[in-house]
Image 1: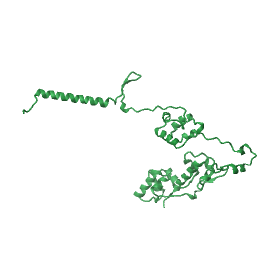
Image 2: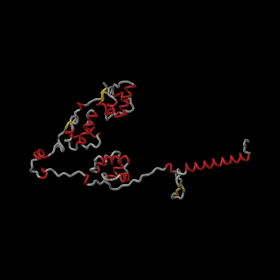
Image 3: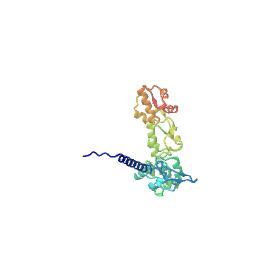
Image 4: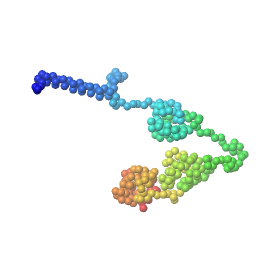
Length: 297
């Protein structure tokens, strides 16, 4: 069998053919890759043609403002109003669990609510009468003053659901009152009574009445109904406390608790507040607030 060897002209032809095929393949790849990444040219007001790349284009959600009922608005309407997808999911979950928005201020408690969104939507919140709280008529002694008030309260009022409130000039001990006693304070119901007790336990006790305002949404001027005794303050033993015990305190939380934990393991026990001043995570204000709650034994 004879050995086939192409001539010089055949070799040149094969080279030209291969080059043409490679060029065609390269052009095809370029068109396929970049065709969708470039936007169509558009003409501006000045007449100049501008080319934009679709690769960098970001969808812009059109925000609208209109009247709505948060108990009935569907997801499309909520998104149009400017709620984030995670907020819409939270609203749906809250409603599915039987939760209802009884007054416009309830919408303010939706997680992730910003001042900008609240101020824009507040005038347009319309709560249907079905979801509003029932208006209770005043008790009979208010309509008939001749009836003995004490007798009316004793015989007809449900003091478990509607506890008798403190009279002007009365006060309770902030560090000793339980939730039942706290609910007697004007402006304090079951929700805030539980919040006060929980925050008191996490703090180790209140050392100032001003600390009540650290509880989100606490009614103003409620401090006048309380007295304060700092004898029962529970201190944290800084050098023995676990990381979870440190983190739980509202004035320490994660970063400051971690700084104390690292100092104990890398340097040694803390002996005074001056050791905290060496840590960049603690400001003078932090140390001032923490001073009543720390023990360096």
